[in-house]
Image (spheres, helix red, strand yellow):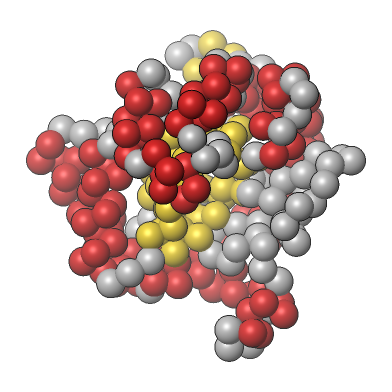
Length: 253
């Protein structure tokens, strides 16, 4: 846990690994949330709702303001189209973005190659490229509806290993799969975990959830948390409580 020759506390490490979801409908709401949480968390997630409402401008504004951004648009299309979108995400200066692993090996390898080429040619910072396995709002019955006979755990593992072979940096997976995945993939393969719900909070539309402490102890690298922080009366205090739980998990992991 050393950084620039100094020993960091578990709380400091955990803070860097907390991603707050800006699941709001206007740029002003997003900026207000970022203002409340600036320097309190490691990264902010811009997803489909905010991106559709405010466009790439909100991403550029936040990056220029010094924030690290996880662009959560889950690209899934033909390889050429996804590769092109990945290059544009890289040009926005995001720290991380994702694709759908179910797009297949060629789609993912073409994406990584396009990002690497643009980084080299244009002198850009390389974002982490990760893939979504199975959405945390899905369970075995959801997979069965769309013709996938595998259990959610087996499907997540299959897609994570495919993602690793394709050369991506990690996957998005529910906390219930993290412990199994950590044993299956390389240690530096990132596990980014949504579906985090502190004790006593509502599940909302999440079906496969876990506490921050448990997720970090099981091997998650980053946790994505939205409403338990953004809908709290005091978002900064809510974030600090989650980070404290994360730190306990790091110490016990």
